[in-house]
Length: 622
View 1 (cartoon, one colour):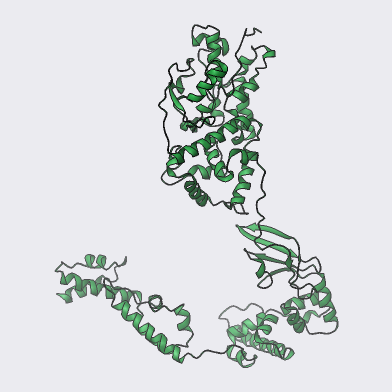
View 2: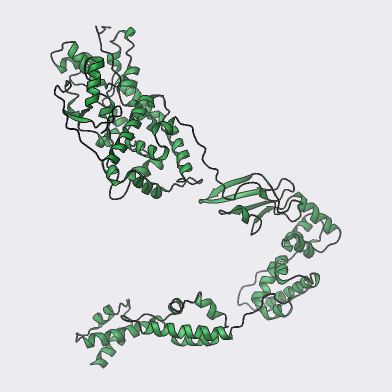
C-alpha cells in the first residue's frame, strides 16, 4: 500500500476540510481534482459537516503519525455534537459511513431536513486568526465557527464574520483563508449577545466531550429527570408542553428564538418533538436551547451532579393509617409502603396493614390529613378481623350488632359466618326473584317484598335501640334504600327521629318570591330580542343556586306557583320573539315576509311549524 510522504496534523478544533486544504497546498497539487483523486479516488471532495470515507486517507498515512480515522472523526468533524442526540444504532451507522464511506450519509439519520439552519458561508473570528497566526504561523478554519447558531466566538466572546466562500462549494475546491480580513462584524444587543455566547460555550463543550457521552437513550433519561425536577413532567409521564414552551419564550425572548426559526407564530413545536421523544433527528441547536433552560449549561446537564427528582406522593408522605376498627393500631400511621399504580392518569394506591392484614384502596390525589376518614375500597378485611368476627359469632352476638360495631355491612358478616359454618345459610339475606314489570304477579310480589323489608327493618331497630338513622343505614343499606324509595311513609313512622331540624321556610318563600318577581320583570323588560323566561334564567338573574332543586322540595309553594305561571316553553318564547320582530319591522316600514321574520327572530324551525303563526300575525298587523 502506497503511503503518503507527509500529512499535516490537525490544529486544535480544525475542521477536516481545513486540514485537507493545507495538505493540498503543501503537496503542490495543480488542482483540487487531482488532490481529490489521490485522497478519495474521485474528482470531488467531501461536504464540510459529514465527510465520509475518512479511512481512505488514514490508511495511507504512516502509522507512527497517529492520524487515524477515529482521531479525525473525533477532533475534526461534528460527530461529537451529534452523538448524544442519536440512537445507538444510528450512531453506529453514522460512524461506519464516516469511516468507510457512504454517498448517502446525510440520509442515514435524516440530516437533509434539519440543516436548514446552517450558515451559508465559512466563518471565522478575527481574534482567532491573530492568535493562530502567532502560535502556528498560519490561520485555519475552526470547526466551532462553522456550526449553526454560532454567531459569537466562544474563545474570545466576539462576533464571528462571514467569508465570501459558499459552504455548498467547498467540496469542489480548496479555498485559502481570506488574505484580507473583514472587520465589519455584526453587532448584537447585550441581552442577545449574552445568550448567543452561552449557546456557543455549550456547543464548544459538546464538541470537546460529546464523543465520550452516551447516545440519545441516556439523554432522554436526563431530560426526564430535569423535567421532573422543574415540575414540567408528572409522575404518570404526562408533560406540560404548553407551560414549558411559554417559560422558554419568557427565558430567551421571541427576538432571540426567531434567529433560529425556533418561534413560529407563537409556537415552539421543536420542544414538543424533543420532550415527547418523537421519532426522527432533532437539530442539536434546539437540544442545546432546551438543555440550558433546564440545567443552566450543557456541562451541568451531562456531567454535573445529578439531582434526584422529588418523590411523587399523591397520598402524602408515609407512613399511612390503618383503617381497620378491629386493629389495635386503628387510625395510627403504621403502613410504611403502598403499591402505587396509574389508570388513565389517575393515581391508585393499595394500603396493607402489617399488623392485621387489612387491605384497602384509594384513588385520586389525596393529602395526608384526609387519609384518616372518607370512603375506602376494602379489598381484604385481614386475619385479625376474621378472628374477631369468629369469636363474636361463636358467642352468639347478633350479626347486626357486629356490623354496627365494626362499621361494615351486615351482609359482609352474614357471608363470612355462613362461609365459615358459624351461621346457617337460611340466615343470609336473600334477594327476591326477578318479576317482569306489569305482570299479574308483580303486585303480589311487591306486597311480599314490602312485608319482608318491614320485618327486616323492625328487627334491626329493635336490636339497635340507641342507634341513629345513619348507623342503621350502614348496618343494612339495602333495606334502608328500598323502604325510602317504595314505602317512605311507613319508614318515617318506624325509624328513629331524624337529628336534622327542618328549616322554617315561610319567610324564605316570601323572600324567594320577591327575588323571582324582580328577575322575571328584568328578563321580560330587557332591551333587544326577547330572552326566554326559563327556570335557569330566573335562577341566574335572582342569584338562586340550584333553582330546580329548591322548587322541587315543595317548601316554597308561592315561589313555585309564580315560576310555573311565568316560565316559558320553547314555543311560547319563539312566538313572543315573532310578535316583537313583526312590531319592530312594521315600525321601520320594512316589507314583511315569513322568511325575513323567522330569520330576524333567530328561530330554527326546520319543519316550518311556526310559519302559519308568522303569516297570520303579518296579516293581522296590516
